[in-house]
Image (cartoon, rainbow, N blue to C red; front, side, top):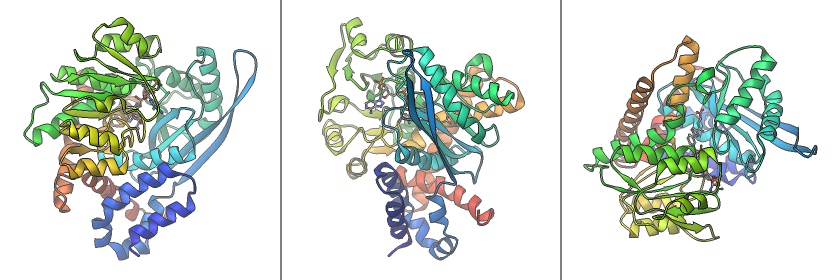
Length: 448
Ligand code: NDP
Ligand code: 2IT
């Protein structure tokens, strides 16, 4: 059996009931075959792949907190410190009821390669909780965040592990987490990114993932002889990534016509009104039905099981920006039948493996999340730089660095794909380019 297949079987055996983690590993290992086969003996002897798929450290903890009725609640907390070969662990925290160890491991594993692709010195990690911030008062969210940090603080630090936001963790949560860390440690340091602008945050971090996604999409289209101007875009999600993807798409002259949340989706043929979307989702924290109620051009569709939502809308470009496995084979077929030319992942692993293969077979330009959504974590690394030098850069400075980083990522994944005989396969290009740097650093540092 090949080393790649052996290690995949090892992962399935050692990590039962973690399908998302298996899926993330499968996708990476499959595209590394050509590299692994060329170095099989050396990698096998050093157990390089076994080390790569095994987190350096996993922290599981209890989070007790008191709700507004005086009732004690208990949630599960996770931090997976996956790989620190090229820098301190870096990656977001997700608060969502679906969070479990397998989900955090898939996210932490992907983060290793994504962070490597940014070209910046950051290792891979991820964390979170099955806590649901939806419907909670600010005081309840604060109580939860303080309890979460009361355990997490001992495992993180500006040069050790630097968490940030992800689903369910935005500016409000980062503020509460930072306050509690500072209080316990009595140290003012850049231990989290995505901070507010008054206490060490970076300009453009809020916008970075969505903007970066569009900078990359733009570079992809240009390299393939197309222009983003005038293109119709289907976006899913209505959170941090989706909102700023929609905003940048409009700035580049494209027309995003959809968005979605966990309860329903919007089709707005005149183009999404970003100011209204921000008011509904960022300020009121309300459902998308309120968007439709305030805008006559918009149709609202309640989410139904088995229904295919935004992917049934005819578009040139699809940008999944909500969550894992939200775009399946049937969705891919509908998009291809409607003439989609490019799909770039704003979310982490939103496309199932069979849907990805269907796009690739049908010559749709496809860029996975490790490359396409790396702008968020890249700008987090820029926030770390600013914290270290105790200076703030202007919005334009950060934004132009972000644009440069995304264009660089595209150039690197494109040339890695070509170099390894898989021209146009940007998934393979990203996995290979991300892997090579980490593997080199792991080899240099010996058996650790
Ligand atoms: P947010 O919490 O801001 O928004 C998530 C959006 O997706 C919301 O609209 C939410 O709906 C919807 N959503 C989440 N889970 C589900 C679900 N199970 N079914 C349907 N809809 C769902 O998160 P982000 O925008 O930050 O994250 C979106 C994706 O992007 C995630 O995959 C994340 O890992 C990834 N990502 C985020 C980065 C960042 O910097 N924030 C960086 C790189 C990747 P509702 O409003 O109803 O909750
Ligand atoms: O998935 C991701 O890259 C993020 N949620 C952002 C991580 C970060 O450290 O900014």
